[in-house]
Each structure stands twice: as C-alpha cells, then as structure tokens.
Length: 494
Image 1 (cartoon, rainbow, N blue to C red):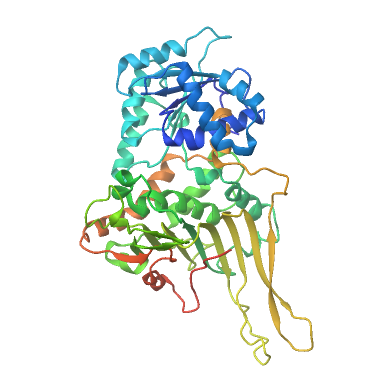
Image 2 (cartoon, rainbow, N blue to C red; image 1 turned 90 degrees about the vertical axis):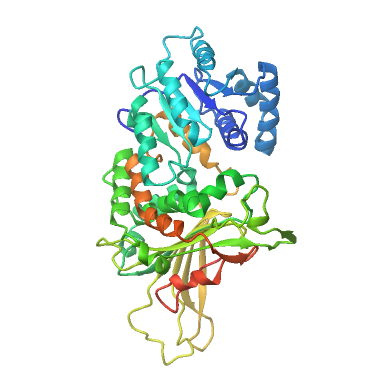
C-alpha cells in the first residue's frame, strides 16, 4: 500500500449502477468482500442511475443480481448487512439537479465529516468528462477532501484522445485521485507472476535473452461480440484488448525487479518496458502485425454467424476481431527476443496464458541416439480457464534405450478448498484501501498508445479488405508469418 494512502472512504458511489458492468462484476465483488468481512463498518454504498426507481425497486433488483452472480457463495446473513449499506439516487448524468440530490444523500448525518469518497464510473467513456465536471461543481474535486474516481477502459481511442481525456480529468482531480482500472492486473495469476519471478532463485536467473527463445501472450475468447456492436465495431480487437490487457501482461512478464512493491516503484519498471519497445514503422506494419475478422462457423455444437452478420455491425465492416503482433524490447535483458501477442473472438477455446519457450541446449549431446530431436522446454502461466503454472522438462523413459518423455509439472497454487477470487474483488478492495499498485498511471497508458498508434494509422488507409477465419478455429493461417523461426508456432493449449 502507498505510504501516504488516504484512509478508507466513507462512501463508495457507483455511477451506472443498473448497467451490465455493475450487475455482472461490481455488485457481486462488493458482496463477496462483505461476506469475507473486508468492508469496514462505516463504509456506505450508494447507487446512482437514471432509472426512476425507489429504494424498494433498487433493493429488489440488487437482490436478484447478487443471488444470480454469487451462486453457492450467497449468504442471507451477509446480504442483509450488504443491503443495509445501500442507498439509491436516480438521476441523469448531465442533470445538475441530480448531483444536488447526490450531495444531499452524501451529507446525511454521520460520525465525523466525510472527506473521502470513491466514485466508480461504470459508464460510457464519453461521459467521463461531464461527470468529473459535475462532481467538481458539487464540491468533490481535488480541492476538497481526498476523494477518488475509478475509470474503466478505454482510456481514449488513440494517443491524442487519451491525452485530451487525461487533461480534462486533471482539471478536476489530481493524478493520485485517479484509478484507471485494468481488471487483468487483478487476476491472481498475473499477481502471482511477480512472486513466481522474484521470489524464486530457480527462475529469475534464466528469465532473459540468454535462455528464452520467445514469449507468447494469448487471450482467446470463444464468444462473439454479443450486444457490444455499438462499441466494438468502432474499437476492434487492437484497441479493446491488445493496447491495454495484453500490453499490461507484457510489462509484468518483462519488467525488471522493482526496488520495492510500492505503487510507483512497480509502475516505474513497467514504464521502462513500454519505453523500450521497438517502434513499428507504418510501412513495416505488415511484417509485424496481422489482423482478421471471424466468418461464419461452428463453435462447439453450435453454428454461429460471421462478424458482418452480427446485429448492429456496419455493412462491409473491416473491423478486426483478431489481431496478432510481434514486438521487440530493446534493452539488455530482452534484446533480440520476440514477444508474440494475439487476441481474438470466436476462437476454438477460451484461453488466456503467458507461454515462455526456452532455447535448445547449446550442444546436442544426443544426436547419435533415438532421441536425436529434443523438444524445447516451456513454462506456461495459465490465467484462464485454469489458473496454474505449468512446466515442461525432459526425463528418460524407463527401459534400456535412450529415449525421453516430456514431463509436465503443474503447480496449481490454489488448494481444492480455496475459493477463487474475481479480479474485481481484489481491485475494489485496493480502491477502498488506497493501494494504487495495480492501477495504471497515465504514462503507462500514453506509452501503450504510442506503441499501437502507427498500426492504427496504417490500417486507417486499408478499409477495403480484411482477412477472415472460420469461427471455432484458432484464427487465420496468415498470422504464422510473424514468426522469426521455422520451428516457432502458436501454442494453443496449456
């Protein structure tokens, strides 16, 4: 936790409280924190939404949402405490009168003054500015108390819009008050990667260009765009996933050991990685990036339509639903090691993983034996669907001949009786506690945009054609051209 972290907020306010993000993630996560006894007694929760509901209607909606999402973790006793914390305020985000009602609700008699409130903006990014302005006008800006705002991605559409959004937010809030959330950083496997690297002398000495052949970072989704066509057809896979989630995974894999685990020390090392990524020239984009769009196909036993046939998608859209890219980090540790990043929708299986392939031994001692060809070693850190660390090494098969088999060592760090945490539980608790370690500083956001901006500009001139791949496959064959070596290929399983 930051040394100067403010005390926990007296209120946690959710803007867009009846939306899908709040229903699917925020309310269940806050309830699980309640059930685990992690919310301090004085914390109050306030839901703000444009639906003209009274308290009873809100409570009915919230009970249904929490019961559905919590499943077997639902506790009537915990829910009673949870519901007792909530108040509902109806209003439009643009209406000054709604903020007067919000101020009134946040000014109810309490023990002492309330100078620390967390505002979670579970709303469209286009409304970040107006909400920040209205909050400032209502007295919740950087000049009053230790209030904080939490923002969901996307943080801009390119580097210029990201800078403009940041300047707008800084009119009303200091950088220390802004929590830019990337839920991938809240996943336990991502956090465990720091422990895996820096707490094990077995691992850190070989985590460099001398031993590692290449790194693959994959986030594969089986579902399509669902009801998100309005957003996704404008954003595409590069903006929606690679610029933020995959870039953040890359920084955690490649960063140097921080001096401490304090927020700024961690983020300083991540920024150094982003600064070291070799720029992709626009004219070289074809050699470093491949994009495609899913066509009709079969996912499991179900026939699914192609992207252009999805509801709400523009006719003849060339928005990418798959992107693969190759990056180099030009520093002492990683010089010459390719990092292959890919993400896509309607792929064969859901899979999120960091796969590290090691170099072959420097001398092939077994060339005169039946085991002349030796497969390389791998370390795979699986994020979804199974959280585990997986290692592949060689061992001799029992018997007289010199033959080997690949031994697969799986380290699932959660015991069977331990309940998995949702990333939002971790991140919301960090917001409440004032720990900014897993949240993005603006220079991280800006540098990630600097990496992908040349790709976006290149694609902006190519609007007449896009490659396709069948839904239910592992993506387009053309993505294989990114590999530096003939012996390199995509790893599609743990």
